[in-house]
Amino acid sequence: MNSTLINTSNGSPACHDQQSSYEPTSIHSALINEIYDIPMIEISRPLLSILDEDKVRSLMATIQSMDSDQIPPIDVLWYEAPNSGNNYFFSMGGCHRWEAHKRLNLPTIRAKLIRTTLKDLEVYFGSSLSNLA
Ligand SMILES: Nc1ncnc2c1ncn2[C@@H]1O[C@H](COP(=O)(O)OP(=O)(O)OP(=O)(O)O)[C@@H](O)[C@H]1O
Image (cartoon, rainbow, N blue to C red; front, side, top):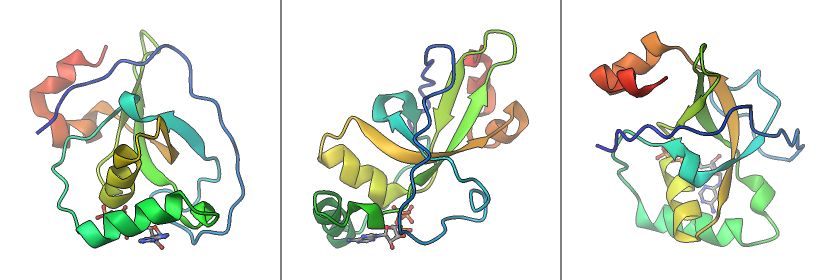
């Protein structure tokens, strides 16, 4: 399990507010319109991905094609530490989209940000949460 908590610089990432033709995504982000380009390096993924290789390769091809707007943004949990204002980003699903971006060495991934709390993050990280200052 990768439980490294990455501390990004203060301030929220810039919003693109893009429009594209993909279907609505998860129930968590269905009402969120803003889409951000989040640096891959700033997102922690605590869960192991179980991958379908054909799907990863197909997504890589789509990302590199003219149809890349057919790929919906992933959901990213966003925790902003109240005292420091530091931002922490976590991704649990979107395993195949994540892997495709990683293999293509893309610096960023399109994401919808879902604000989260320490209590919610405890489910995934347990005592590692003491790092979130
Ligand atoms: N070539 C493609 N192959 C697979 N999915 C594609 C492709 N092009 C666009 N998509 C879209 O990308 C999204 C992939 O989501 P999907 O739930 O299948 O995988 P994931 O969320 O990245 O991984 P996982 O569900 O395993 O965490 C779907 O909305 C699908 O319609």
